[in-house]
Length: 185
Image 1 (cartoon, rainbow, N blue to C red):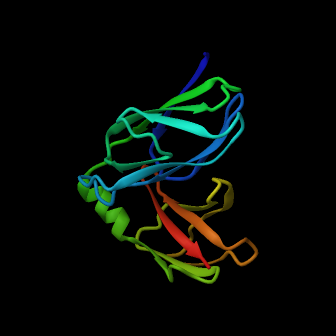
Image 2 (cartoon, rainbow, N blue to C red):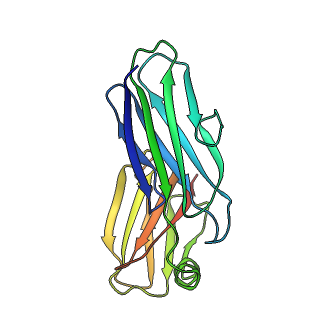
């Protein structure tokens, strides 16, 4: 059986959509809540292609599409196989990058507030340090919905023309990025 291998370095915790020879899937990562915490997760979602059902083989022995807990600076490998062996196995490594430093992480994390959350499609981003910052908003499938420079510390956002659901708000400065999950209901 032929195996397709991919290596993924997770730096920004956004949904990532992958298209393989036969499979397509979304990798959703939830970061650990702090640099020394081990409470993050990785989920394989929207898997299509091949001949269902699928089997998952993680390097830690798990056989579900979700792996928990994950820490910063850890590596996992996953092999996905379809039941009828209609497609080559898809195998990849996930490397969760180490956080910058506790102080830099906490400063950026605590300076970025989204209110209200959950919301009705309208919310406000409040960030203390906006020098050279950009905002990106992604839907649950990893599609970029909005990208713009942050020009003021309080920025109203309107997603009402988009479907209700889970979105990821990424604020990026020159050398740091932080992502918050929001719910539009």
